[in-house]
Length: 362
Image 1 (cartoon, rainbow, N blue to C red):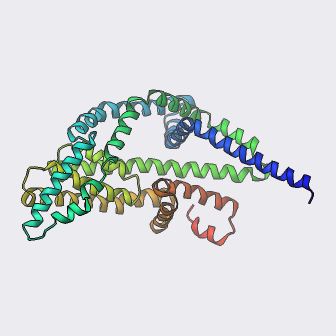
Image 2: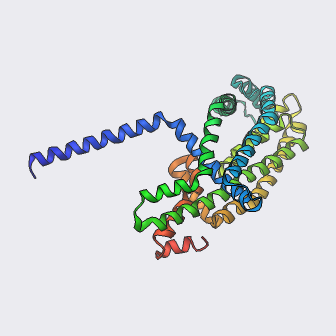
Image 3: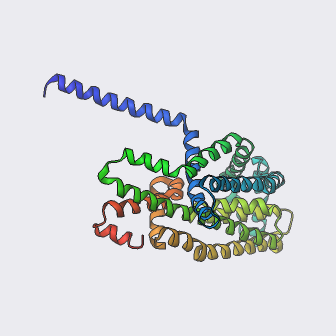
């Protein structure tokens, strides 16, 4: 190997690294556009079955069916804004979730009542609470950050909404044009397999996202009913936050239960701890547990097992593995990505025994 060959190899490696860095920087700079594309793809997957329904049952043209779907999206967004945003803003202010110092002070008062309750049983927890500085370690900053993110997004999402709907319109309307474009880019030998994979992935993920939206809505309604039964103030905002947290598999409901327990106690500050605060918190947690039992045994099996043709244990292991490797974002994206990999595996490696076992129902 000559010095010239080595230098050329080093130069190619440097150029490759520079190209990768430039591409990563480019993707970083257009991350907003990428986010629009991802949201548009999800809306397209949700809208495809509706477009098919309008075309087959109502005999709409492709363009008219697409416009009808976009109008449905706009009406949903408008309804969400008119119904929920005023409640979120007003109840969020009432709950003081936009003020970290206020909720932290409420937490300190709550810990003082817990300490007094334990002292009544000759359990000296005051020194323990002080030494552990528990109040400062319970960082509830994620609540205002989460809510402020939602409010900022809602208040400044006009451009994003217009862009997303514009992209979604052409994804839905010109689906065949994109498919024909893909045909020109893929090798002839793999064309049928790739197109079959895309069709199956689109069908499975469409059903998955529709089911996920339905699941979150059901969980929101059930949470709201529980909170209203026990006379919780700010029931809408608390149920909304807890339902959104349910997007995170397995961990989300636990976080939601802890959150509602803390907020229930804070909402009853000034009441007797033993006769009012503690019993109501226990009742609310029991209600949330019932909701989770319903969700885990009805909603989730329907969504995961029926829409992606996966066994619940299989889904659990996939989500658990993704959580260890990539954190919360990995847990959220685990099921869609795993579904895509299964479809691709079945199309390209149909004779593999493991693939056959995992994809026997697809």
